[in-house]
Amino acid sequence: GAPERVLSVCKKFYKKSGIDDLNLRDKKDILEAVINMANRALRVLAIAYKPLENYHSKENIEEDMIFIGLVGIVDPPRIEVKDAVKKARDAGIRTIVVTGDHQFQIFCRIFYKH
Image (cartoon, rainbow, N blue to C red; front, side, top):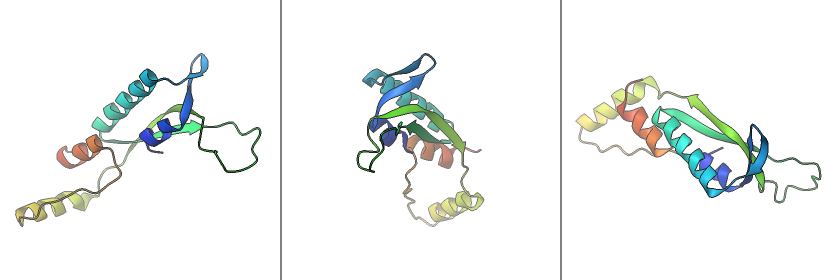
């Protein structure tokens, strides 16, 4: 899911030496990695899990999760988007981007050629 949302429900994270507590510094480092990936025009997803040995209900299932990593997906804008934005600008129409993407990713997708 969205990195900020996934991190908000994680208490621990997986690393080479095993599972450790996830502190504010770790979260900051992860969010910096998200920004770096988004700056390269990647759609960034975070992955976490929760062991369910004693699973009895769906209540609290998305709490105390273990963060395991980030995935960057190349998802270029549709070919016709660039021309549509240019036509709108040339016609004096102000374009507003409404999306769930990270703000750095939006900038890269609109202003940089893939």
